[in-house]
Amino acid sequence: MKKIVNPIHRSSELHRDAGTFYHTYYDDASRVFTLFDSMSWANQLVLDDALDAAKLFVRTLIPPMHRERFMPIRVYEREYSEGRKKILAYGQDGIRYGDGYYYGHPAATITGAVELPKDVIDVDLCCEMPVDPNIVLLKSEHFFVQGGCLFFSPDLFEILPVAKETDQERSVLLYLRGVSVDRKYMQDRLGVVTQAVGPSTQEYVDFCNLVMDCIQEGTGWHRLTRLICKLYDVPCTSDTETVEYTGVTEHARWLATDRAVYTAPHAATFLVSPGDTVQAGTILTDAIRVIRGRDFPDRLPLVLERRFLGADYSAGLVFPNEEMPVTIMPGFRYPTFPIIGRDEDVRLFWGLFYARADNPAILSHAANGPTINPAKFLYDNVLYPKTQFYFVDLGKTGPNRLPSVNTGLLRGLLPPGVLFSLLVMAKKQTLVADSLEFAGRSESGTAARKIQGTITLTANHFQMKKC
Image 1 (cartoon, rainbow, N blue to C red):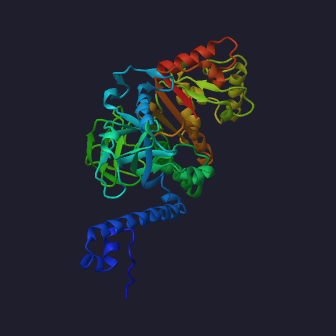
Image 2: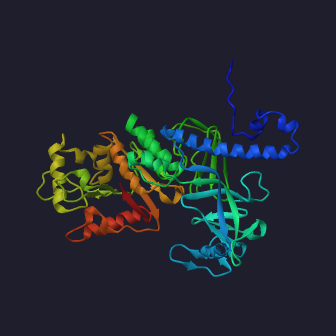
Image 3: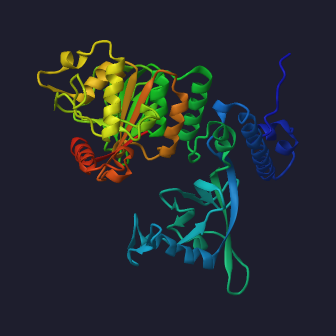
């Protein structure tokens, strides 16, 4: 015989299973039903905590935040009216926009503000009762959340029952429904293991799980691409999917497949169209460009840092990505091309290069007449095919991207023999040449100026960082 478990968190079934006495003989059956409804809510809260605790034992099920069914807060009239002024300041510098308007919303529509309890990140709606409320306030219509506060357009002291604390002080009891509480679930469990940092978002949860997958199963190209996409909040497929619809809303672009819905900023462009079938690990927008194989980018110099070259070098080297003359450096028997860096490091590079070259005439054979492209020569003859480049345009990444310090984790996740370069580009910023390791103490200063000019011009005034 099949065992039937009583779902005590469902009010209708709890009322039904209590017997027919209250329904048949009790005069106020609706009041009893309300009582059972409240009991079911209390049981549901216990069940929610139990389910959260069970999910913490499986890393792929750990939720970003804890969800509370409701949370009561006492609102005092003086604090409520004074809280309205908090929205008049924009940013941490206290820039004021006047009494008529403030950043994002008309100030005249705000009647007051309530400071949220600690660790409360978001609220779905507000009401005057936890069960069967008569007054319901909706987010984005009656209130919005910003800076740890709830800002209301209707006056709470006109629509909610008011209690007098003293002759001068009044208060109302407000119930928050659908409360997101940040209990640092992922940070306290996988975060301390992976050393990944970030806020309690789904992107951070997915990133930590992908890091653990790489540790346990290895880092393939597709998994590496998904890691970078999660890091910069760029849509990327996790399975074979078929694109069905695309569209644009007020806040973002969206794309729907037969398995998921993806969003992207307006600045980004989706690279697929309805009807296309994409494989797992496909980047859906132009926010990240992947260079692998012979498709080496034009006009961008190739930088080899000191930690890549070895301890014998005093700094790094830059290989221009343009046609340069092939000459014979004083003291060398074989041809060379210009390299940006310290003189002793350049001579060390050429000495080691020809000491290990099987054919001393390799440079002459690869040259395009009297000139050669140093960056492409190095890529084709040394770095290819074990190198993969990722170009990230920050202006097209999502709002939930994780701190860039997490790029340091990629060094320990890549298998031996694989070269990896991450190039982050941000518009309207300049590169400070003094901060570049290889341009720290140039004797004549020519190298520093050339590095700065080449990167700025070829990258269209983008800032570039190599991790």
